[in-house]
Length: 431
Image 1 (spheres, rainbow, N blue to C red):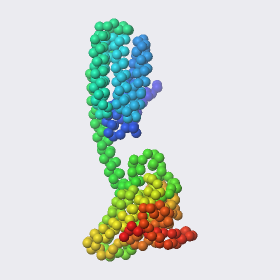
Image 2: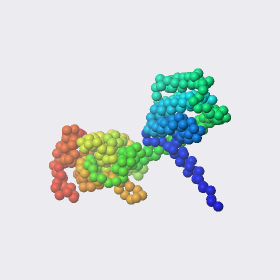
Image 3: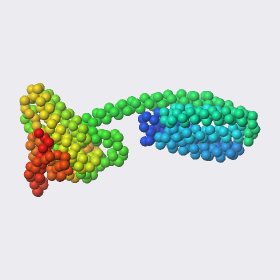
Image 4: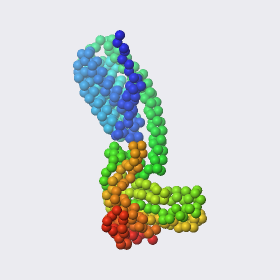
């Protein structure tokens, strides 16, 4: 005995739901509620007219069978337009097909078949859309009801081209009436309720995603989170793979931070550090830098990845950021002094431009988006050579920002791992 074929209904339902309700890339959250019903209508229309093709061929009404080939093509074109986001055009295409189809059906097999009732449905598709001009919506009503009136006037008593048995005409008429006044409203009610459920689910999902993104930005660089959440596959691959790129590299730390904070209570020290890092992070985000690492009071920031413009823009934004950080420290010191911290905290800032290998570093379980290489080490050494309260930059950075900032040459410094001394400059904007 042959076992009956079992169909996984859950998978079938999920497939049907994906086809009907899945949001294509061209559809945004605003037009998604309109996309779903039009997508369902066009999908059903294409399948329905394919069935009519075989039906009319079976009863030997070949003109309508041939026309249904064109009908299926028009409905498929309407599906294509719908999935591309052209909802009004999609509705216009299938409305045109409905009008032509009903006119031909009445002309060929007569008024009694009941196909003319579908003309009443045409304007509904337009009026559920916020898109499109009111002129075209009103025109759809006029065309639909004019077609119905003309058909009624000319063909209600006219002899059809093909004479079908009265029993078949009655069956078609009652079937069409049943569809228009029973199946149609029930389907609209069902899919409307499903749309409400889907819309609520989307809102809940969006709320969850917004909260996740907001929390991620507290632990990951803002630009990195935005690239992951809004970027395409190419953008995501750019942060997971390693590649060489010219960057502007920035390091900073607070001079003698450990010695100063030893005199503070742990809770006060934690509050002070969090206040400092919060203020610095706001400035970093303002200038669209990528905060790679926070090591105690030390910051490592780079410009040029994952989002890049040009070398000069990266360098100027980075130096402006460093200058603003130094200015912000004056405000913080005044605030901390009023709270009982009598030591003045000063930061050192070092900036360098050069090639680095940027990407995700770490294990398969956890990775850190950062940049590594000799130029990164040079930037860190420049920061260590910087006077507290100043911004020290390399010659390569100076060449990019010299038209924007007045800088004073500080001679050469020796950097571990680099054979020749490096020429460095102090940014005069910091006073």
